[in-house]
Length: 410
Image (cartoon, rainbow, N blue to C red; front, side, top):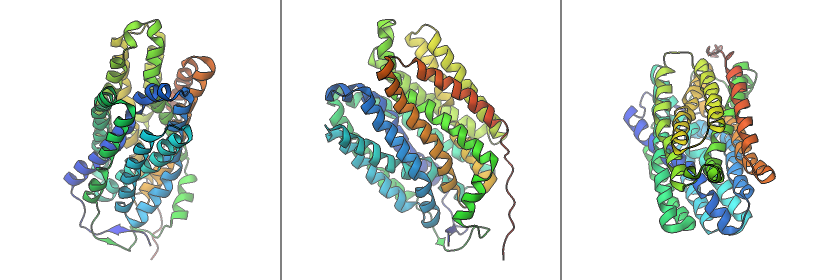
């Protein structure tokens, strides 16, 4: 039996405040990991590939386990899942802080935080939103929640840079661990009331839901497109700061830590407007066309960034544009999944799509470091990101947003 909820539901205010806070901490803390790249690798005598592999592993674990975590949340409720996620997040950050061995660092930052993110980020929170918000407000509410996560990215970048500057990498990570532990009490505020062992409108099983989704061409195309999203955003988040540092030989003004910090903060700031706008516009226009537009706009922005002369101003313009496009794919993609398949297994199906996103994230993070160590340049990875954006633009165009009609059994 799967869970369903009576007419008593979480209020819109509760969902937006505490769902927003959950993703603010979860997404905000991880957004600043790129700032730790050089301090940690230089301090431990590691190559950039070591740090990149840890972040890549984190994203891969996050994606691979997300469907399982989603299925558990759909079946048994999200509270225990989110509590465990908050605890693992704090332990993972603490483990990164005390690790001097590359393997231990990767286990803490990759495995533990990857598992934590399956339980504290969009898939689980959007499952709660989907079950408690009517379809006419669902995309808007998802956009608001994503905007809250974007605010967390904007907020946490200067916080993390300040902690790094004043306390060093290890103590900064320990302080972030304390912040992450706040997700545990936040989870209790998102506890869904009145869970009963009844079905939500049909007798579809998890196995049937998976088969139905995997045989749906629109679901497959969304999944492929989300790979591109993960590749682009995680490559930029992890490698933008060292990329700017490298180019300071040609453009001295862009190498200062404040430039990278400001750029990442601007991504978070403009992400607020982008995700909110996606929620508003996606309620009125075809969401798959909006997704196509986002992906091609990213490719155009990257072309301009890598081929035009750099200055702090051009870096900030690029960051603002990419920020507006950063996570605006998430409410649109999840809303399409909910529109096609309904909300009964939304957390699990969103997790499946997100797995593709995280495969892309793994490739963007790891190959950014790998190809840099082999070639001494990030240029080839930027070019891959451009080509992938064009690919995602094309494959989202034929997506169909029509709901599947199922026979209801007695």
